[in-house]
Length: 158
Length: 248
Image (cartoon, rainbow over all chains, first blue to last red; front, top):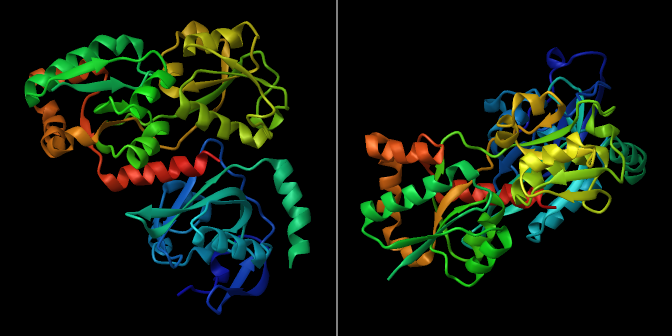
């Protein structure tokens, strides 16, 4: 299950929206316009099970998401889903990795405090003994020009 | 029957004799005849792997996927605390203070080390630089990468963090680090090929226990390590998946 966002966790002025997540789940999202810059030289790494439930996160994931590790493990990866991200991007992601292929794209992620951070994400299926046992997502620092392109493109995809 | 052992060609030259000492120790401990073959470059080593002549390898993480998935190698150990990290460095007088300020056509000096180059190129992405829009300046070693920067023959250098840290203070004073990677999970590993795999567990145990006696500690010291840590299959698979995401 995924909890609604809580006003006491939010830093700064926020807007509220209800977001339809994968599997008919609805989540109340509180979000601000505050960006956290991606730190130089770091990778954000997480692994999920085949159903998209987080099974592993690295320290950078914890730092950038604003959640504690124990809040992340067991939560759906859509805990990071920002309302500015078009659903089509995630459909493409899941369709691609479920075909056993690698997906890459630029993603605006939602923090626990309502802020956001942009990443260049790559997701691959973890194949063990011929079977997909989960997915690993590795995020790196995107260029400003790519973010600007996405800021123009993504609103047109809703 | 003799087996072949080889070491990733990016080993530190200071530790060349250490690998021969290690190989002697390994033969004595296991009773297996092992020949140490050092290749001058990655291509020569990869050709030997493709020809199935290699049985043990201290492998660069970049080659781990091919070793495990195509050649049936399994991990044994890694050196404790020896994660591979990369640095993006410019001349201290350079006007560039942020990778984001770099432009296509930037001259980038690097060595043949494949994992360091991969990590370095990822750290140049925030400047919209990629393999297609940089001017490559290939150097034989990291001292020469530094030299290219000092002589302004390159705008940016990609270094293995350990190699940069080992440069003299005089050289480092004339350079400026823009980014240091903090990835932590990419590392070289000693790996074992199919012909030796029935001995995997005892070789792994010998290596992990190596630091518990004076002789073993001395051999490790000659390699520049203190302890071998066991690497299990899943840790190796995780690193391979991670390298796979970066190699895009």
